[in-house]
Length: 292
Image (tube, rainbow, N blue to C red; front, side):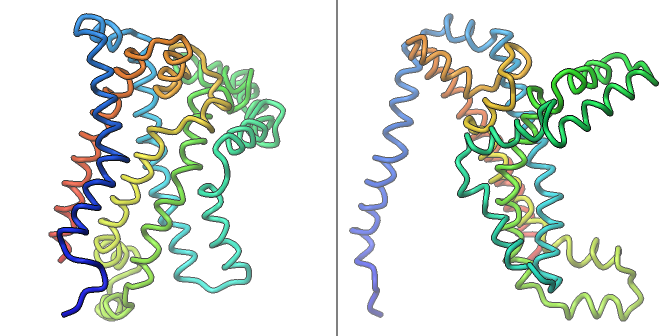
């Protein structure tokens, strides 16, 4: 059989060369630069309370945003595939806006809307003030509501969550949508004929088929959110120890000409991200095997 692409050797050589130039060599240079900091300084840097707080916020907010994107992405994909209505094509095109919109523009827009003077932020601020006056909430809830009362939903960890959900949401929709379009209605109709209600049909027939795609969408949204910088710096407020993210810590070290420290934070972030993505991919592979 004649192949369109040249032989295996040439194709493999091009693939390895391309990946080496674009991925492997830069990553090797990153880890090499990080070793210049030394073990003692590296440990001191990575255990710094400010860096640890940024790591917890970056990975925690990314996981929460990706989880929210799974739920909303599944709902939007369901509407786009299962229903016909005026403006459906326009809604389908709007899903891709976060892909095309510069992240800095997204951050400024979200800050404007969810800030204390914004359309939504002003309402949230009034709600927080009213709730505090009537219930006098304390602890983390009181601190959370006080932040809303003073600044709206922006300049807080909730604002970071909003930005990360915004940029990760399309990945879930575009991953689930083609799988849902290929699903046949025959099995659903057979289950309904046997007396299964709508919830049983969704839980036992539809959801297991969509689960691998949902895991893939979660993985893509999570990976995108962990490295996000442009939209977050505008809406987070960048408060040390509270609303700083790891990419911002890396940029701060670079601005101070601490290149080994920046490389160490980046390398550690890369290792953690790779380990998490590896676990998720193993889970996805197991789900794919079970659904065959």
